[in-house]
Length: 161
Image (tube, rainbow, N blue to C red; front, side, top):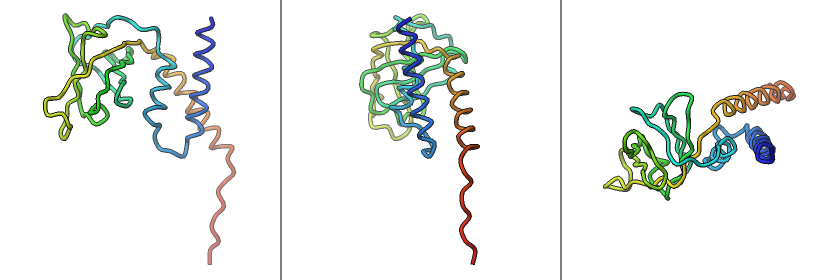
């Protein structure tokens, strides 16, 4: 119960913080990481990966979000991975279709990356994401943003000469 309450408080703080940043077109990596950490469960040892990822999002140089399936996501903490924010693709090592923390790696790929050998970054922790809660929070944020815009006074028109 205590964990649920603290997650709710953290989610509200993240929503309020992001709502206050309406003038910026995109949240920073730290803000996005905090958002997903608020929706992450307890660490797990591994997850199953059948075929390709359906998506991934870098969250700085030490974390990323991966979607093995459209309704399943994991927050991966990795050792410092300088090329991760600039990668156009990634690959995950795995054994028998299982990605395991402290054993498997993430390798960034793309033109112009600094590491000529594409140095892999070790996965240090895997946390499942509550994808339904993420969708619900995003919807709440959209509604709050729409309400804030509708309550804002209209901008004054510049005087015409």
